[in-house]
Length: 557
Ligand code: ATP
Ligand code: MG
Image 1 (cartoon, rainbow, N blue to C red):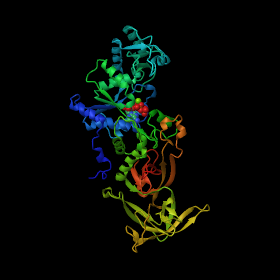
Image 2 (image 1 turned 60 degrees about the vertical axis):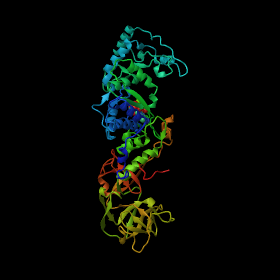
Image 3 (image 1 turned 120 degrees about the horizontal axis):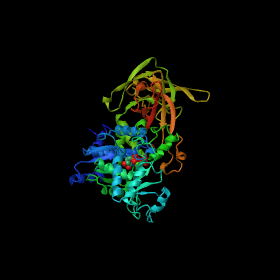
């Protein structure tokens, strides 16, 4: 069966090859690892976005391709920014994308006790100390890329002193910012992360998983590598900005007594998508400032936003497959994402008719009512057909009629003929206008001998337009989306509000054919000649249908 026949399914079955799968193949061949164990480690401080989808597809995809396992682990070391709402949304998004994590959901906070013990071990080995420099002093002492840092005056405390002070930190006897636990590595290291990085800081904050148990929280660099090792992760995949942190990752694991073999971190380039933000912090701002209708606004590059917009899991997985995994930094054109959903829906979406900017047509020589049938898909008969009531009054789109037009205009013109999709050929005879000169009704005649066939006398009717019965239909709201930003790199803007596209949402009111009365939310349709749409999961109801434009029929330039 051809690739196009089943949409995106076939392409997906080919296992990707990239520098990471190459490493895995070598590790399995050499016996370094017997199986592959990956993890996806989001911080629950926002909803997942398309960039995370890349990481999800990579990590879960590898586990699937190699018959391995992939954990979902919440990297929850910063309670101030985190919330169970985010935990829940992340689980939902990963599942919706079609992936299953191994066993239970993991939390870095599951390991807080163990992490504390490893901190003690480092202190006992003389490899960590309690520092009382203020955050500003610490910054000064750190040095710069061109200048080495200076040792903290607290650096050479005895093990006993450090143990006692760390205990005090844990017991809440220091105020926030007054003490921290630091690794004792090298203040002159060319790698800033190795200049005695902070391992623990004080935060009097309630944690969504551990409540008030802790007032000290471990830092990412200390937590992540240990969590990986505890979970027996073999290949710890992250984005390139963590390249330098790998030194610290290895340093921590090398210096604690934790079971071997140790995990290894590999970095790949993050996804940057033209015209979009891929930072939870910046997306949060759009939500907080009310610029969008929540995290799942259909204009958001979040997984939940794309879902509400009408993207399918397969289309997002296909996008991630097409962009591949490398170490090269680049920006992917937005059209590459759109092409994936278009390909999917072109193959798999039912066709339907919707008139977005309606004008009434009266077919003067037609009486009564006729039930026509139309295929749900032009070349997939197995998708069935639907009924279309044909009536004397119908709606067509205002843009599909002109009183005068040249030959390029292949729609309805006064005195000329056009075919109504799935129905008859009609001819425009005259129009009626209101006081402002706007056309209110187009009066036509139809040729009863043109259903499913060309006019008998050989007249050529080139144009085909879509329509909806004016008697049997559902009124509908159409939300037409455009890019959320007017610039291609909104992330670089100081004031994000200044580059929001004021026309990113245009609302229209029109009609959809009768068969769409119970259109399921998020199920994609091709509204013929209009675009791909789906019913909005938040606002669409039987008595007030709302359809989101998922993507246009063709790439626009
Ligand atoms: P954000 O800046 O949106 O908060 P993050 O990296 O801080 O992103 P995490 O929750 O820590 O968010 O990310 C979880 C995983 O997803 C990490 O392994 C991270 O490297 C990966 N990831 C995040 N953004 C992208 C992206 N744009 N492309 C690919 N992977 C990404
Ligand atoms: Mg992060």
